[in-house]
Length: 98
Length: 504
Image 1 (cartoon, rainbow over the protein chains, first blue to last red):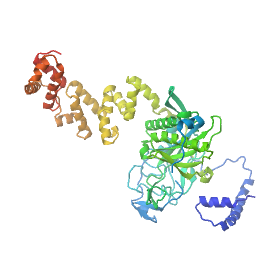
Image 2 (image 1 turned 90 degrees about the vertical axis):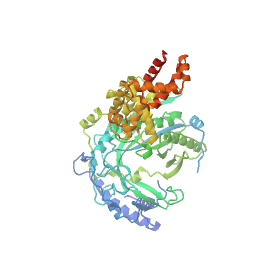
Image 3 (image 1 turned 120 degrees about the vertical axis):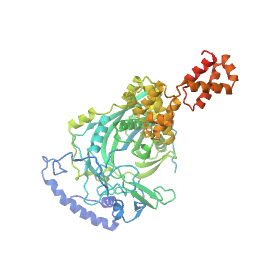
Image 4 (image 1 turned 90 degrees about the horizontal axis):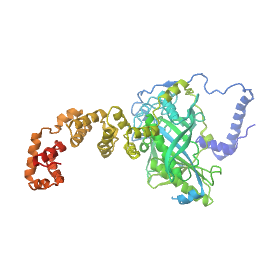
């Protein structure tokens, strides 16, 4: 039985840049508990002889040659931007970081 | 806001500094690490971008072979082990200069690990070699560039908004991390500087990066902590970013030693945080507090296959590494019979490679040094470019030297030929012909010019005849002027004495 604390939910929310009201923390903590419990069933399987796997296809060293290819047409990259200034993406100021 | 500092000597008397250095080097590959976008510096903003480096949905990365090869070569040059198998990982965090919302990096499986770099520093007891242990060198990608707009200072604090250019996003980076560097004592600042300097030299020698600190292709973060004695456990460290010159590396270490010492002595804690170095004022200010590694929620990158460099590949790369720069310097200093100071001059002028190339092509070492550290360095310095960029090859310099030894050119004319070469007027012989620069070798016009000079200054004739040979200088000068520098000064002197019946 896992037990996710309110603080852990608040921290995860911060890392994910999601606003969660204080009175919702408990609610999500319970849901996350249920999800983790469900996933934790996997740990009942005996995996002592099974190596961990991150890539299902047994390939290595898949390389591309260092030859330039055309980038997006000028302006195309910016076409979907909410705001543009001087050919750059305009974003809200960033606080408390960097 | 300036913080309290303790005098450096006092700080060192009371505490033992432990250094850590993280260097990011931007590789000089043609394309980015995971896509084929060009990496050329200075392009219009957001023109060297594609769905991969912009993090558009569904885009898949493809790994640059030269990026991996460069990482292995760097690892080998730093005496590292090369992983037999390793993966990329996603480092998750949100920041507008990173459009994917994660940086593709390596986590616990760096491509190179367990190396060292020996650096030389001057101590009170004379030169000493210090071994800096290297923890790892791993592959990752650069971020975009932010421009903070508005606000009073143009800095991030008080900025109204930011503008982002993603041309740099995805350019291959190698991050080289030292282990805690212990036992430096008071020489911590010098060791830090010598390490970055030696590393830069190695990277330049490998040809993997242009390693320009001022342009950000080599960036250094300085970690520092203090402890009471070398036996105490490690203290809390600060990480100072934006240390963008060799001088700043030294100053930032010194500053942090003094700042930590003042805090600790006052009974305050050191906060584990990122600090920002200010080149202009020579102080650091507090930045964000560090996120813990677990906050980055690293996990193996599913879109890139693991890398398993074959031992044959690694050994081939090892066999073709350039000579270690320090070893090479010692060898060339001996071979060219020059002093350590003269070698230092070659290094400072950034012309060692050029001189070596010239000498191996058969040019006399002294002549090659004369041109590269003299006239060429002067012109390059005047124009604020590297000597290399002047585009004068040793083939041309050799030709100039040959013409000088034949007596067809003198030093003054040779400099004019050089001007012509830099101006792109063609090869040496066509510039000599085009500018009419040949030394006047026929005695007739020289004698005429000597006679004219003597006629203009009759008093000098008696002065010279009375034995004051130094007075000949003004006559030679007048002849050189009359022939617009095209006379051979030694020959003029000879002819002058002949005419006056004086022997030297």
